[in-house]
Length: 238
Image (cartoon, rainbow, N blue to C red):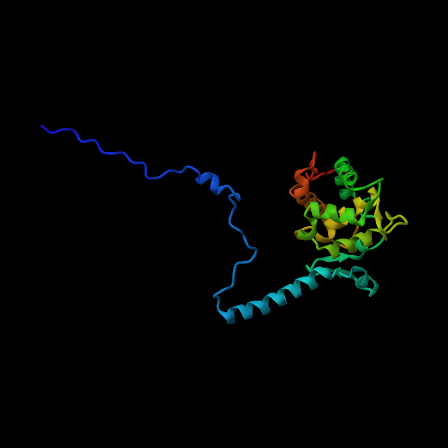
């Protein structure tokens, strides 16, 4: 007769105390470096990359720092102002006449978006005046800088608006009327796309460019937090 043999159960491992020890200094994620190590890479490749990176940084710095020199072109007697993008801007857009009250189609768009633009101005302005720094904050929040124009180009348009009929005595501040004029000119100068900007202040290309800018602002980071979006439908009327 065979007796049933019972194996001896032995516990050879336990996880006791391991969790405690693992958390003594905290469980940290692996350190992420901004640039990967170049240890072991081809020295010739690294030397060439260093020269190329230096030239790229210098070119980008120069591009960001230089504005369009709009007034310099106007003072030289040019018939049009030519931007670096190749867009030709009629001289009336660089002068003192207010586009926001002269172009019929632009005025219709402004009337339909009057409440949204007023709320936007009040959000960034203090005591009815928007400083240059607050204007730049608006431009960065709505991706106008750097997606549509750079900082220098924005400030050049800021100065241009402060020479227009909408301007008051303070060149460093914008009131609501100047802010509206600034947004309209931002569309005319830098809105993405091609527009027929003729030598006529009543041309339809101005309204088309302004409509594209409002669409861009609706889809920007700042536009996502707006309570009411800009109305960009084509508005007709006499």
